[in-house]
Image 1 (cartoon, rainbow, N blue to C red):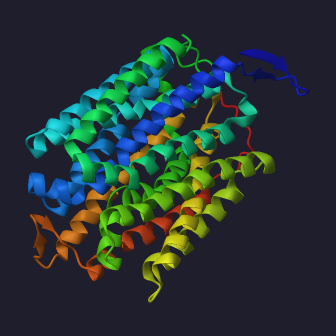
Image 2: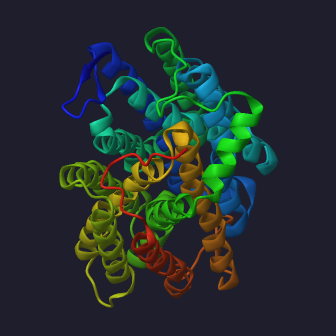
Length: 429
């Protein structure tokens, strides 16, 4: 990478082809992590049958990915600042491979929990490490746009983890498929190790030095109400795609419209396609406008309206529901702005910590909502089972999914409370 002076006198990075390739490898790892994140949504009946578990326990099984992902964000942010993205991303990819293999061979739900936890821990580095590469090697004026394109690449993994994965599972079974995914993680680790440059410089400026500096920086981020507001916005707006689209959309569509598993997975895929469109679009519009708050509000209100119509307007044909969920995904893509806004509302010296905190809030929300929806489904379960898997009624789903509408309302309120940064980094002492 090279640097050039802007008219304002600030230094702007000019990216080299190798810098873009390094970013692409990080984004590819994020794509792999997203594939692993949504994969259980097309295995619901298989997992419930193999492990003989209820909806609440299944929700916890899939949520273990989010538990690891969310809880380790801040420690991983500190480690990336200290050791650089290359070593952390490569090690994390190997961890994902180990977790995927353990999940594939697990004879009981306890080992399956452990496997999903390892996968989530490894995948938790992908987003932070990729944004670290972005901030170190790519132009700062395009941070929101590149963040959006990173999410777009991740959506390719999410799409692959829906309908295409459902087809693979029908042919080879879920255990063989997840075992094969472990090999892919090892290949990624090798590519990252050899092609991501060695660097440890913090993308937000000088990282806090030493244990005292790290603790002080963390306290500063936690004391800033905007850190919480941005995390709340991203978590509540994204939960419909992450928790519903990532797990419960497939069984919901099967129950409501009598679809086969691959056909139901296509609907969940449409939500991810919408996200893939909406995230870079929101980043581009926001950077172009020089504003963060207005696109966030539009995304929140549009996402709430389209999801409410898709789930609760009576008599809608399947094509209309699928179209509404696609549009919902586009609006929900605005959640990507929480990372740029959270970063800009904190000082440069805590930029990495602020991004990791916001990401922790986003993933932590999904970690709570997946088992919450499962528990609400269990409360209304009428006792029906097919091949060892619980069958939930349409009315049961309608009641449980009201929590997603409540989340949408909270996202809109959080957008209102977010401080406008005008796409500029706040300077704090």
